[in-house]
Amino acid sequence: MRHSFLDKYSNLNSFIHELDPRVKIITTLFFLIMVMITSPVFLWAFLIYFLIELIILIISKIPILFILKRFLMVIPFILFIVIFAPFISKNGYAGSYNLGILRNLGGGFYNINSVLVIMNVVLKSFLSIIALILLSSTSPFSQLLLGFRKLKVPSILTNIASFMYRYVFVIVDEVQRMIRARNARNYRGKWIWQSKVVGSIIANLFLRSYERGERVYLAMLSRGYNGDLILNYKYKMRWIEWLYLIIFFVILTLIRLFIG
Amino acid sequence: MHIPDGFLDLKTALTTAIASTGGLGYAVKEVRKKLGDKHIPLLGVTSAFIFAAQMLNFPVAGGTSGHFLGGALAAILLGPWASLLIMTVVLVIQCLGFADGGLTALGANVFNMGIIGGVFTYYFIFIPLKKALSKTKRGFLTASAIAAWASVFIASIICSLELAISGTSPLNLALPAMAGVHALIGIGEAIVTVVVLAIVIQIRPDLIGEYSESEEET
Image (cartoon, rainbow over all chains, first blue to last red; front, side):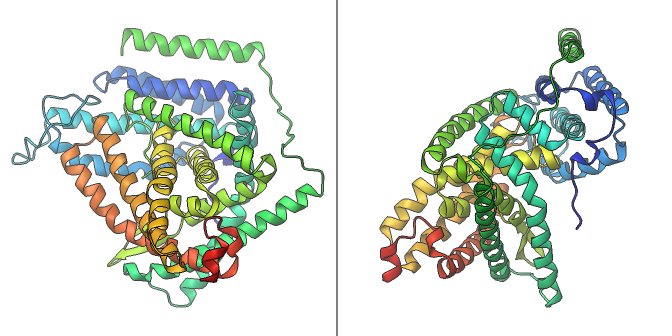
């Protein structure tokens, strides 16, 4: 079993961990939107965003290395942008409309605009990944989902999500066993027609998961399940939550007003 | 194809988020009416299946690989609206639980892979093809193969359009590159989808709503 849980650090003990997940959801979303609408030329703003994250990171005792590892996931996307950035025309600016025709293919140099595009993407995705990890590493996943539900996300979605989160590790274990079995039988997929093997694994996996789902459903039904999950939401909005929310909003709005 | 945070600008993120929320609202109503809240455990486990299936890489050419998306497969197996819910949940878990795909880009990702790759392909490619082709197992599988290929291909085009409108990548180069790569990956997706459906038809034909009794007899 080699899974990477993101809520691995969610049961640490800190001020941030004790906050109501609703507050964390709202502040994270607000933070992400603020990061999104800040133009990449305002480096100071990004520095302050980073400092805010660093402070929360230190208070919540999440290891930094863990976050850096997660950032690796975005690298293919950044490469995609870096490859195409030289061909972005000079007269647009990053984040602006740009459907212009190829102008500087011959030159092939990174003009100031393409540098901005790359900076834009790298800075924003880095800050956003940290924010997302801070959100999911400071509250247990089930409580986070309940927080979403309290914020009026339809219960059917949060319930499916909490079931999924419960079973995903079982199914992933299953698929890893199947992959191991396949590789042990000398599978070396190289060409597209060999995808058939993957197809039969997925078919098997689907039937097994579906039948597991049916069994789970029947087992729950016989124990009085009526379509809703009753879970205990541990948090409530205390004055400290409101204070955190207000301070957060004020600081970000100030940055936006005076720097961004 | 999971767009991370920071790659889209506000207008693109907002537009796709509104479109996805609309689609989801309808899907929630539709699934509640047809399946009821009681089927949630089943949908949950099926979402876990899609998540796990997306971990499987299939070979494309000479050692490179693409990974399975499953939008078309889920729509054909479980119906388009249930599949939209499932794809959304998968994307939310990938975003929050594994930092794969962004939170502000969630609207765009749901739009590309759930609405375009699932609902749209189902109603505008799979169903018309199924009606046009002969009502046999072969016809059914052909329709699903084309739908699976199209779901990946169209979703990749929409994805590069979103990136271009956000000003993150130039349309005239990124679009052919994305579409070209995904035209190939789509073939893998089609092969996998057909193999899965063929096996499921053999073992549990009752699970595929669209594969009716009459087709079984012919």
